[in-house]
Picture (cartoon, rainbow, N blue to C red):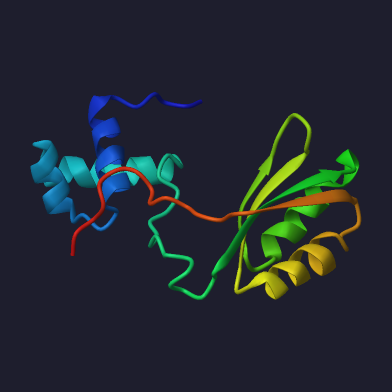
Length: 152
């Protein structure tokens, strides 16, 4: 059973989305709650899966992944779970979504360059048993994510 989030939980989630490096002390001060309350709530949010992880947001280009693309797949439905496991194991696949509509799967892929992207799509993904077709949409530009940026 999913427990609904109250206003304080939502404020905690919003604060941590803005800056996942907040200390419990700063979080508590910002939200006007005790540190013990902040610790308990964040622990509960993690235990229940509301907060999945804390991670760094890395600029793909500055980290050597200058080519990005959305790749759509049509797959044999019976092979979806096996394909999903294989896709999760491939480096460079940032996001996987099973979708409804014209395509079955949409991937966000990051690669060093076009040759690396070509290898990933043509050799790795198209070579998977159960993948029927792929379509690659190159990303020309990605605006900065919205919302406050952490300062440090």
